[in-house]
Length: 299
Image (cartoon, rainbow, N blue to C red):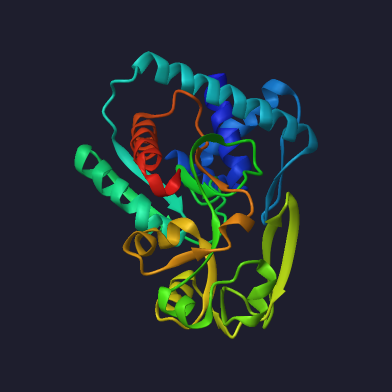
């Protein structure tokens, strides 16, 4: 059997921790998967997988081979994509993830443009306010806000956002504009996504970090709700700048304490494929990168 084929089967079994799961992923029969693994182990004269009727686990020696096999498969895929070239028409299913509000406001318009431009594609959008394990959940492209902790992904920086404190003009007219973070303790505060009656708001003062423990009068479960409360003049809230970009442009909300903001947070487009990514992924990344970089609210 072809060595690259055997490696591909082994990687699938290792990642799925299941012969049946690998068979479904590869479109093979379970016996064919079993034969491929047996052939590979016989060729290498080592045991790559421990398996019982209840589980499949990669052995210690198999872990090293798994990493090498992944690199070889990626290199082979990149070589294939390089031969196909950059003019291939995007086709197939694309899975995209992003934070909920960012996805609705910035990613969804890009997805619509992408689908209109490439009729041979379809898209699943996972807008979730949690870090998605792209490999386990079958995600092709992710938009992440924040520093990246996993260097295994290919990342393209496309913008940045700020953490800002804001309120309605009516609230500020009635209760005054805070000039230093400590003055927030005398204001009505709205906090999103906290189960506690207290929250930490971080600032930067003369180059030094400042953490202010605030006691909100209103705690809500979503940023949408916190923004709505601020729009209705109940108090100040702290959100990402992109989340209130339309309200800032219309004058419905105003930012305060801007000179005490922490450093901007980067936005990246990430994916797991190499520099010769498939046409469906490459075209989507190019489209989204151009859109996000052109948006002044993300500069």
